[in-house]
Image 1 (cartoon, rainbow, N blue to C red):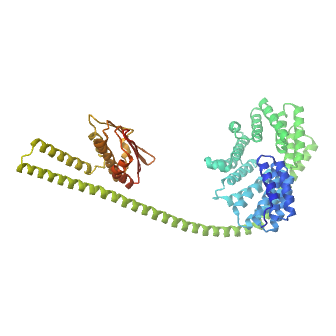
Image 2 (image 1 turned 90 degrees about the vertical axis):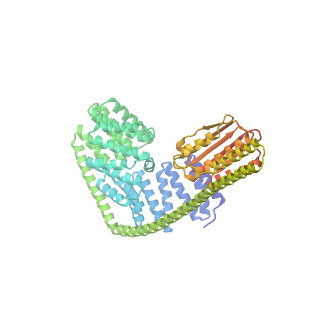
Image 3 (image 1 turned 30 degrees about the vertical axis):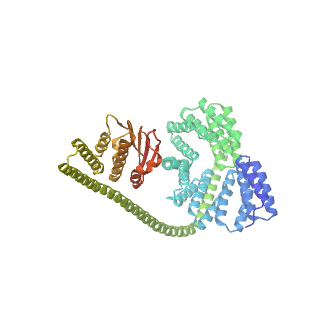
Length: 614
């Protein structure tokens, strides 16, 4: 691959910035500079890129002839490189360009070639997308039978593919074809299928808001044809209230609304105003097909009301139909003329046009059926091969998914076992504490016994001995209480309340805030015991060392996290003292994957924060 010239980079950057700003003339200028440089170096890849960009920028400016020239340059390079899929893509784009300049036969040839190339490569999805373009082209050209066949073929390729934008478009094409051939029930069924695909925000985004508006407009047109005027008018008005529509789409809806109001009520000023306003806009945009449609509707509006206005608009519609080069449009004008102004010349012209249309439709049907027959076997072979490839891919994906599921399952089992071991360790610690409690109690009881024995052999001050005895006994009782087992079932709430009450006195006020007893529901027993022990230790330290008069404890649960805060107004302590005195509490919290932090200074009280995942 050739190294990219710095000049090409410069021009490419300038073109990109201009296009981003919507200045497509400038973008074309810099891209042409880029092309000249690429040609001097005979850099084929850069030449290909520049023609591609030119095609896109000309399209943005609606200069479709120039877009076609640039796109054909790209096509020739791609064909020389035997890049079939890229050629298919460019052929499809050419079809769209030719359609925009009303060169329907050339558009059809390009679309057909694109579809064939996609099928040769087994790409049925893109073939189905191209068939949507073919169906719409045939529908627009009045070839409804072939359009229906193309749309049905497209659905066969795209069903179960998830490409709901194109599937909905094919249903809309089938609906319009059914309407135009007076199969109104089928038309309504098809358009309902298209609209039902837009069931949520994701599908609406995929299909596109503009397309959904088109589908609803089609449904209203069906109601209009079946003389359900009120239903049609309701949909048109709803669509016009949608601020997301572009001006052109709103003007088209206005013409449909105006014509429906005319069909329901006869001549009326609202219809006249809406049609004239829309026609004026279509003139400004030089949209010939929309101009023709509005002119013909105005002619029908004035047909029985004002002969001069009728004559003006029917003549204008006839002129526009000739410019379009669309026999169907010319035929429609003649049909309206014969309703009020019969002449032998017009009648003969009308009959001749009818025959021409029949012949053209037969030719197009024959061409389509012939093309379809020639490639039917190849398509089936490609589909079979594609299905086999898909089956192999599905089998591989199932195997891969099974392996992934097994690995995930093994990981979770490992984590559960690991967590269970940690829980067992914590439980072992609690069990050990209970045994120590019993042992200390027994030893202290022995001390009491020894002291009493001394009383029998000597004569110390009785009050002193009794005071010592009372102190030993109280210490033993406190140690036993601190290390006894904790109830973790429904009685845990009472257990915790009793703990706080036991440290409440005339000198110390213990307050609980932001505490909902239901937070303990679903929390593991070993976490409850750990929290209980840590709070007990903090309260004990407060009682022994801090001289606090007020203790505030808050307990909350949010997003599977338990948040506990302890604050007192005692004398506080230094960080060095805290490391020695609070090591046990920190170890307990860490054992349950939690975190304990504190904030304290001498004579400024203590603040502890505990965070535990539950």
